[in-house]
Image (tube, rainbow, N blue to C red; front, top):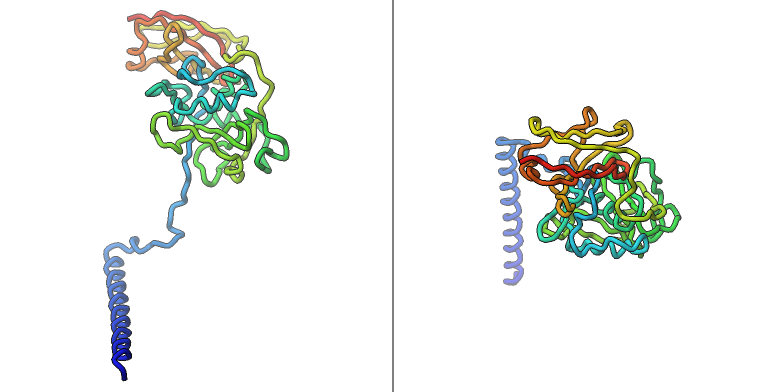
Length: 322
């Protein structure tokens, strides 16, 4: 027997011995873990939690006036200018779920997905449903097929909205989501893909990336003149009760159809002091918290009331006591 064969035989024995020792070590570890806590051994794939992707979400609150938008955002040009309007939000938008126009840091505005698309449409002078994905996609066209520039075999137009609602139980996503079509097979969206970093909330993606997730499309409709939204036949007045620290609104509000909110600005509407505050349907009032009152005491306010149908009910100036 040559020295090479002897060496090979010894190496083989060593491998077998190592394998046996490894098996004994594994069995010993199993016995210890099983004694301490049997649940630690339940590592099957069936025990793994279901993964959901949270790319963003929204609430049903309406957006406010375009005066809150940071400088540098384009707010004109109509439907044909939607790509430029949407892209002008780059570096100007910080994502925050439920935000519909809160002034953010470093000349940015905090928006969620529906807040973003609504501001784009508003800047373009387009009709829009001033709310979240539930209102945007309820009773809208269901999506059965998506290609690069068509949905359900029909050409996409600038300003078309696509997405889903939270109630649609989209497997990968926990919340509702909405995106706006900007041409060339692309949709633009405000989401959390950039984390919470300032100004990093703008995403542009091929619409086909979401072809298995998109449930509805709201087709863009004919442009309307102006960018401030349509006004209703509703009227209102507002007063402030110092003892109760409460606003009282009077008017012909129809709470059976709409929800109502108000936004309080400085007199020249340059700064939002209170954003998208709900008006109670029971007594048309809204109490102020102490920190809210501190923001507005002694100031001359412009209070703007909106309803959930993208209608600006009106505006009124109100002097707050010190």
